[in-house]
Length: 120
Length: 107
Image: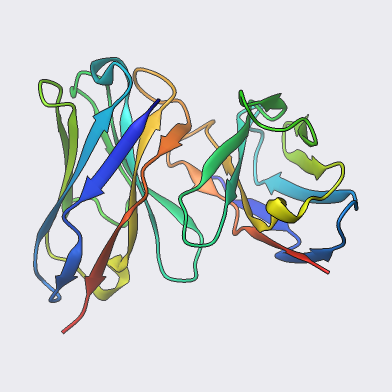
């Protein structure tokens, strides 16, 4: 059974930084792309970033490009996102998702999410 | 970016009703459409991929159809446990984009 467990969320001031982690199990982590998707309170879903299975290719939404960095450690079955220069509009539940393919695909399985609140 | 327009934004129906939600893409996405179910306080769950393929373990009362720009999601006989928000999403292009969601309630 695929399990994805996010951690690292919390309250941070505008301009601050946070690193989220996602521990994966139940599948061959190094064979699938992974993604972050967020959901602001009471709003819809927004794709944030995707990293290919071997980590060589990364993709970002325009709203986070230059501020967020996605990475993975296939030896630890863990996905990360480093979030810098955080803004109030980054406040959301951040979900880790397993993609259906090596590079792109769709979001096949989701973690339970971790809440990031950006406020002074 | 491909815009996904989902309707209605909310829907109230009775147990046993047939429920239909539509999703329209701003350009041709072929069959590359997903439907997710999201229960309150929970993560989205994949129901249908490639517009019409039911994910393993998903009840057969759920179905999807369409291709190109127009897609439909149907629950053939609404059950109390189907109360949720339903989202469509295209995976034809980056950035992946979602519809705004349809909140389904029991009448």
